[in-house]
Length: 534
Image (cartoon, rainbow, N blue to C red; front, side):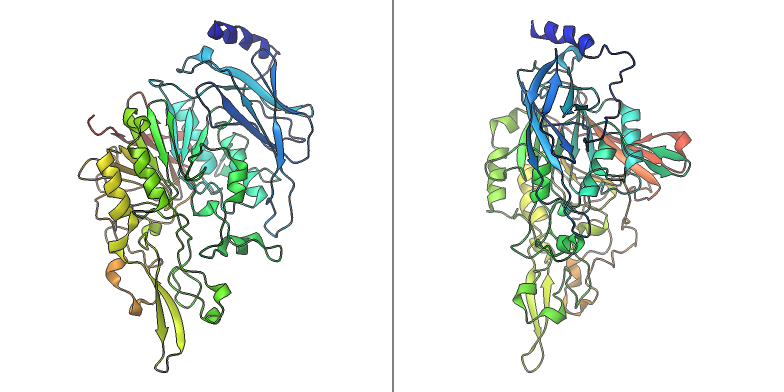
């Protein structure tokens, strides 16, 4: 009966002549279109934003049914210079939805309204049941880079409707900066691009991104760009973003913006969720990124000018949440990998930001806690504080990977280095980084060296800990199947790559789009089956 009811009301809600399901909202007060968050088997959260305080905020769905939204002002939205920006978040939960198995009649029409200002019209649905065919976009590291609009637009044009987004971190550059999230005179923002309202011209073609988040829930992992450093009203937020101390950093803006699933141990920063046939485990595996200059506040040293001031101690490349064996997150992961939900899932996917294996720039230094070394002169005066990162203590290679291997994980999906590359372990576990989305910083193999990420002065460091070329974890990259075998990766500022997991087949397909040859469209460059023979 419920399915027949929803089928009968769709025409009523969309009967206005000329109404489009992807029309742009009246944006006098709406900063964004609505997005879907954290669906359950019979409900889904709907979230949107305004730049004024609106009193009557509601979701209209089905046969003109309404849900009143709760509203809250975001606490840390600012301009780059630090000026406060007013942004209100509105969230309501639509309940009593039909079970969703991918059928059109199980999707419910909806729109949102704030003080009479309406969004476009879209469809929502409950969390998909087992056996539902889904196209899941695997992406990361957008950060408003040049090719993101083209990437998203071509993904939608190539595969059609996207059912969910797995985003492996670094959604924007500075999480407290309002105009990176919202269109405040710049259409090249996170929500504009992910909701099809962007505007980015590359060559002779202008791209808008794609209307994805209105109908596809986002599941994100935190990257280093979701973290802010010490808060201050005295200097710009760019400096605050970089002012991370070992015990002073936060994800306040990120957590205020989104409603992710929660775990008891990690809240919304690491969690597990079943989406159709996929058990997705999201980890908080990231750290502070700094440069390589010895004598400055960097990954490898303290600023020589602040050695006598403990308040200025940066601590090197600070790991934001421990993942080493015995840590709280590791113990939670052990429990999750032993859960019924995990073992019952057809496909087992683990997503986190920092790569365990990769050819990109950011795979070094090794992912381990900084080991402090004090350099003193012959009189015992402190000259420098350095930080080493022993490769033999890399937590991802020596603690995390064996645990995931033993548990039968099918796919580990990472971001961070802005490249496309994939690997497979001897036991058959797949690694994919598909982060050549908006731009690229290079890949390093066949003699190309990551010199800008190793210590600028190696005299106090063991060179064996900082692998200049290839994968520091020792795996050989797998060439894209439809490209010359000499091509082991995609690292380009003219070719953008997107990857799709099809849960009906268990195949991840990757596509490349050359922005200098838009007439060619997107071309499939690779595919692989993620299942490990079960």
